[in-house]
Image (cartoon, rainbow, N blue to C red; front, side, top):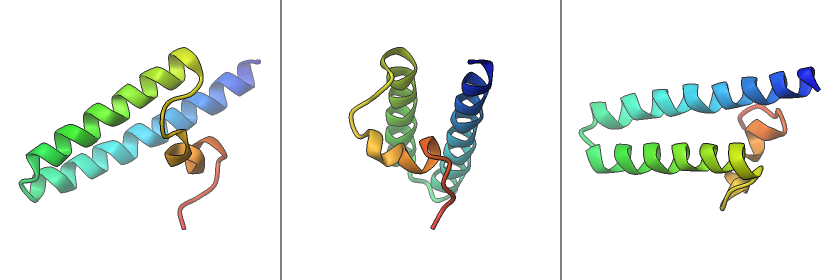
Length: 71
């Protein structure tokens, strides 16, 4: 069970890292509304997955949850 929890923690960490990178790009391009929307949505989705085990649009996170790399 400990290994499984560690795997999910690592995947959450990767999602948060990519969110931070995306936020930097959006802020650098003065896209404040888009940055806020992406941040709020991602944080809400992570909270829902943590509490319930799923979220609306969970397919958007399949790459992370399955351990696959980017295209």
